[in-house]
Image (cartoon, rainbow, N blue to C red):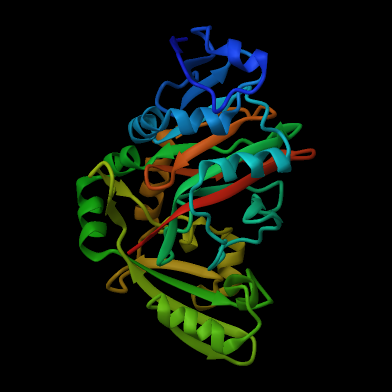
Length: 339
């Protein structure tokens, strides 16, 4: 395993122990996961180092690592409670986002601090870039492991630059030219009701959000709302200038659903689906190619209590593996970006 020592400062060291930490050259060590693709691992070697303060005093280094690796896994900094994570996020002084236009249910445990999705524990959550389907998305996504699962429960990641490179030139060109068209059928019978997605019980407010987000919408009865909209599939990163695979074309595609469910509901009644921006179908073969592109870029690591995973959302996609036992992973969405 590659290891390099980093000399990091502390924010306003107030104790003798904290003051002494600056005398050591191995306060924070850099290493790689077993798979050297990403993210980079920064581990604290001594107690008392404040992660939020360290990051504030090492902003250029953190930014460089985020751009290079897409994500940083911080270990052994003692951020292992809801209150501790909230304090850490506050220290970063970044704009936080509410979880709007939801694709899955989440419970808020603090001011814009959420439990990760309540999706059934025995199921996988497919790879995706957080809120890439929405008109506004977070540039930074931060996870915190308060309680790792008894079995599995990993949060796999995949570099979206590599995912894009793994696609065939033909499919890449097709998405670049046509983009993605999203369709969601919002009802209480299957998937999420519109009230959960839009975080309101006011139909007029939901309609206003649709218009603001350039979504077509249609009410079918009292409780079913159908929305459709088009977005790019490939984005240029605003800070690095690199092209990234940034969309929900795979996550929302019908071919990621259970075959029996697809047969029972029929294509017009699915909770969600994607096609190319001109309305033509993303074929099963094309959806499977996207799945393989994610798989080839996949990095999976076991959570440890107190782990903090700091991601550039446009450079690093994520998902979730099935799990057994208690599992508490927190998430905060930061730094809004818009089309």
